[in-house]
Length: 251
Image 1: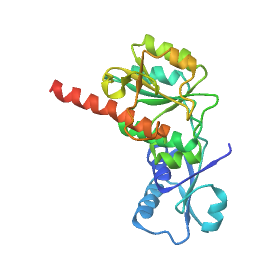
Image 2 (image 1 turned 60 degrees about the vertical axis):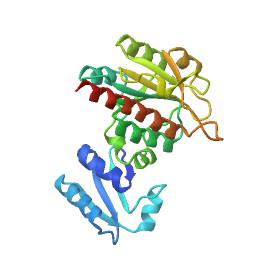
Image 3 (image 1 turned 90 degrees about the vertical axis):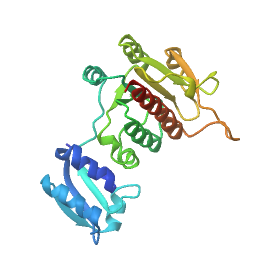
Image 4 (image 1 turned 180 degrees about the horizontal axis):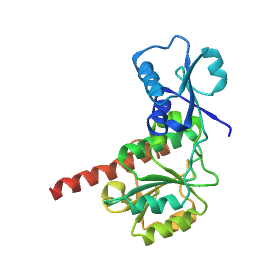
């Protein structure tokens, strides 16, 4: 089995905490000894993971990006299949929140969306198998550990997946600039699937046709839209806010 290199303090630490068996070796740049690196060394030692040292210029060749002097050799990334959704929903209490990224291809955007989804309490992130970014070292680095916690589910037919989820009682809310209803006026407290479209193109036609509601994000300035990862964070945390308010009113 070929190994891949994951880099960055947060990404490597998250792997050691959540999936230590995947980590085969941790490499540290010569001279790195500050507290957070020492904490990472202790975590690797506890999990019996080998630790080595390398020159920074050598590590620069290994990966593309800011590795922070920390690189790990790990078994390949895991992307979940559609069957995982049923398993997740079966064991979830309360109203689930799922994020769908319809054709987001930039790995930096995917990483940022995974980070926001985890922070907002989403159950999983769903993407189409084709023409979509997937788990890579760059995605893991940008996600700052969230990629090791929140499931990324790749599906062959997104429209069919949405239909199945609707049959389970989830409501599909798609984002579109021309929608009449604001995200802030849409009820997001029930079982919800939030769909964000691709960078620049938005949702595909078939995806849009499967939406129960369309909403827009109000813009007050001169720009007409936000980066998809920023817009995703805003929408997810509006859902989080509404659910927090509903929870307080029940007490």
